[in-house]
Amino acid sequence: MNKYILNNKGISLLEVLIVLTIIGITGAIIVPSTGIVQRNRLKNIASQITMDVKKVRFFAQTHEDSNGYKIEFSDKKYTLHGKGLGDTEPITDGIVKFTPIAIKSDGSEHPVKKISFDKRGRMFIPKGTETEENINLKEIKIMLETDQYKKELRVNPLTARTDIGDTIKK
Image (cartoon, rainbow, N blue to C red; front, side):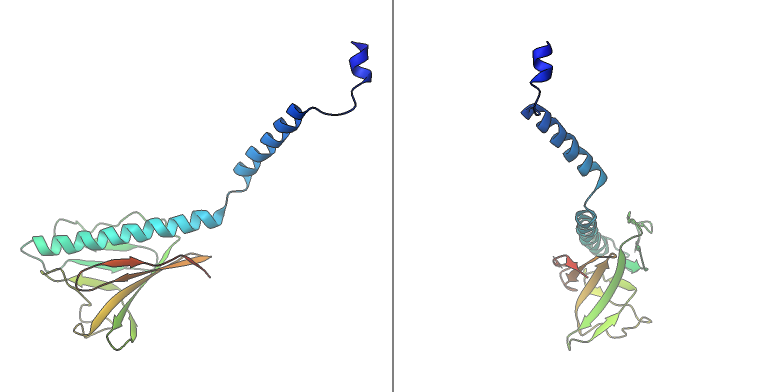
């Protein structure tokens, strides 16, 4: 027994592996990657908006009283309005900022707060908002922003086809 105590000149490989495992686990717990979390948050909310646009469009097309189907945006949330939707507020975290922008065919951009749908499922900007004309509407751009990242959605007003852009660091 005394022989082993006197010849102890280092540490074993097993001890090194145990220490490295403990450091790795604590590092994974203590230092979460906030960039990945925010990028995933933007991706999930972009997917949610895409599904909600298609849902409101579907309701406007399939219900006889199609007036009043719209999506109303505020700074950090949006609401679905219309018969059967019950003024639904999708779950948002209050961290992502929404900025919908109407783009006319001449390329000019106009911020909007409401996007409405007619009985054929076409999107238009209701009168009384910043954009009065809905004939020349090329697309709707919805900007999603957090403190560090932003993501862009582009929605075709005739088909509601949505293109989700890449997440960009500010």
